[in-house]
Length: 258
Image (cartoon, rainbow, N blue to C red; front, side, top):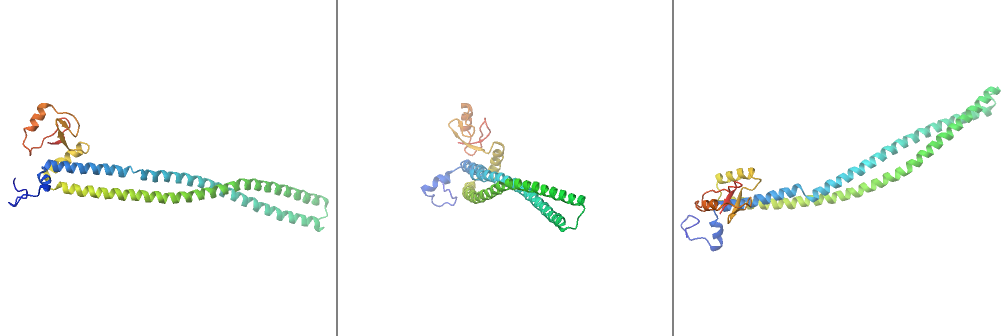
């Protein structure tokens, strides 16, 4: 057996012979295996269930937050209306006190003026009763809204805790995938040793045009890339090619490893 190191020294150990005997196409097939593994990992990374869980959770948070914002807006409107009513009632009460004081002061003696003050007093009190009833109705709507808002606040707090857990799970999944990708990249670099730049360029070109699979093994008469059988004439032609010759599948155009 010739010296695989090219130095004229003793042959490599038996355990090293398969690796030393690999042809450039066999090495290229190993590169293909790692590229396929890398593609699969990248696909997994973009379709991680943990990422989908984070996105679904974010949608739930947005919906709850929007619901809370709607209730908070309504609460603000009601609170402003109550403040307006209370201010108006306070103003009415002050006017009622003033009118009552005038009625009982003896300063007004003209019957018509006294009647006008009494009429105003009654009108003010009716207006006060109406405003206080309106305020009560608003408060009856406001109280449940306040409770609902507090409940939504509590729900958002729970969702925040769950969101942290989901984010951590996604981060861990991404870290695990990055470790796998690093290992695949290292194995690819090791497999590239012995593959010429020209052969690699051909491989990359085919890989870009053939959906990521550029080289496949010929098993009998079947191409491992497209899984179609080659004709007996084509198989015979391939067998007659020298070992270093690049042969392709006449069905899909992929490089074939014999």
